[in-house]
Amino acid sequence: MANVEHKGRIVSISGPLIVADNMPEAHMMEVVRIGNEKLFGEIIELHKNEVYMQCYEETTGLRPGEPVTASGYPLSVTLGPGIIGSIYDGIQRPLNKIYDKHGNFIARGIGLDPIDFTKKWEFTPTTKQGTNVSEGEKIGWVQETETIRHFVMIPPGLNGTLDEIKAGKFNGKETVAVVKDKNGKTHNVSMIQVWPVRNKRPYKKRILPTKPLITGQRVIDMFFPVAKGGTACVPGPFGSGKTVIQHQLAKWSSADMIVYIGCGERGNEMTDVLMEFPVLKDPKTGRSLMEKTILIANTSNMPVAAREASVYTGITIAEYFRDMGYNVAIMADSTSRWAEAMREISGRLEEMPGEEGYPAYLSSRIASFYERSGKVETLGGDIGSLSVIGAVSPPGGDLSEPVVQATLRVVKVFWSLEASLAYARHFPAINWLNSYSLYSDLIDQYFADHVDKLWPKYRLLAMGILQKENELNEIVRLVGTDALSESEKLIMEISKSVREDFLHQNAFDDIDTYTSEKKQFYMMQNIVVFYQESLKCLKENKTLKVADIIRLPVRGTISRVKYISEKRIEECDLTKQIREALDSISHTQEESND
Image 1 (tube, rainbow, N blue to C red):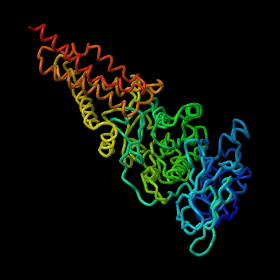
Image 2 (image 1 turned 45 degrees about the vertical axis):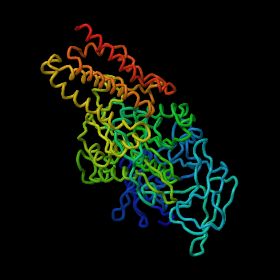
Image 3 (image 1 turned 60 degrees about the vertical axis):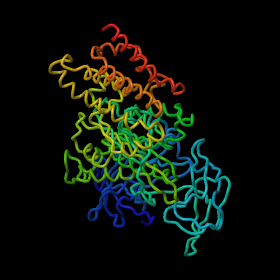
Image 4 (image 1 turned 180 degrees about the vertical axis):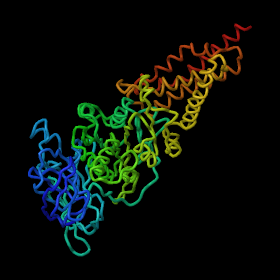
């Protein structure tokens, strides 16, 4: 698309949908400036002599006859040093800079550089002059934060010989290298790249994801893990804890970089993120979480059309860091608000509605978003991954509604949140019977190799106990607990222990908020060993009752393990104490019978 401006004029206005004429050279998805205030917009439909645009800003006060200027380029993001730790709106305007310049309110038509081009960065070359370079290859780096090296890469599509490369301090726009292509034409390479948000960034090939994205959330890591480069969705009704789970994943996941998109969510929730992240410490580095985080804030009171842009802006930024060889995780909260924005724009365009009024292309748009995830070999030869975790907010918690169903068709992990668990104060409120992960079999080998070979066995045993409890609950409802055998009563008690002592996790407790995979294994091992040894005692001693077993003091010790710090992790292994306690009660029971 040629970067040539051309002008038209507004003929009609319907909320965020603007119609203009006299723009014969306009292109689809071209960025436009609308009206006298130069509001930011994008062309979404061409019809005969008219151009239909969605405006990413409030359109109050616009009038027919005002000018529309097309820029000649598509909606794009600016990528380069200075982007980490930033807070952007849906179209990559820096909200902190806007606040400094205009106060609490975003002035309409404002345009600020997303990156501070006055700041100089120390560029360290890693490639010598005269070297043959190809697209995506790293030629140097900038130490952007204490923990993240921002690599400068040859832009996609450019191959040739490195004619010149410089070391020293440069701003983002200054030339740090010159590449001569096979035709003898020279190309200046700076530290920034500009990339259209709706186009996937290229890579060499996809790789099967086999390593888990460690989250520190026990119900996820043990039962429903997501792989690095995988996809997951978190649907649930209002108040079930979607946003808290997204916050926890953003805070504690093992990703090198986090991109958090607040898409149509309440402003106070984004405020919590903005207030918490700078003071929270990354458990891996001990540094501030903001040193590896980029925030996209498009709250519910911002123009609805910008929600779509925010999702694409976020995932394009994430792809850029994936191309450097980093493991990136993107949190989208919530994709339902994005779908609602598509529904509103589609309705104003008078398109044929699909199910529940959503556009017919809803499924393809959702699929194209999640399919930008993956573990890949980058153009530069590195291995990077992009994990996508999206929250879905179905009305009334109805999992059969179109956005949830369209999402489930493309993601491989489903964390089903339930209001009943949330009301019972069980958090995370993930239903262990409805949820699933299609990565479990791939990831089990990793946990067996890096944590303990018994990890897969314990996971399957614990899940079997929870499923058996669900079956026994039907009997209990009908005839009561007296109808159960002692071994079945034991299952009910052990299942309660799995639910309350392992799955229940307090996000606001300094110790319980994050659990390493090693501690998770020890916690589960204690429960499993208690179950296996108790079952053995019941079989050997027919007069022994479950009521006697659950009164053992070691049972309370098992429940308190979650509050033992990671530094005292070895104390979590209570297997010897459990066996001694059960042996003691079994012998005591035998002696009393004699």
